[in-house]
Length: 106
Image (tube, rainbow, N blue to C red; front, side, top):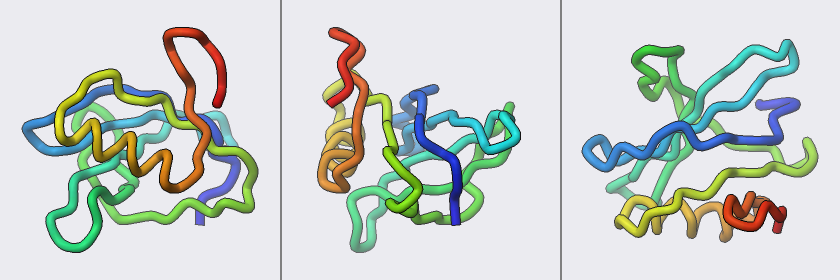
């Protein structure tokens, strides 16, 4: 279970490995990493906890608990198949997102 994780800042989009990497901070104010990775089984993308830099490899699947408060993801800006799937996942799960262009939370 994940606690006190509210803002997921976009770090990178890796179309080659089909994942979008995000950084957030835990309750001890330490940077931790998650990625949304394309899933070829039954879901468009899956959220994984990642190892620390420099590799940031997916470690294990996680599920965000919606009762922890607002969760905000920075949206990818591109239009690759992966980025479109990630945007859809964020919107379908009713997470807030930061519009980088106008600076307004939606």
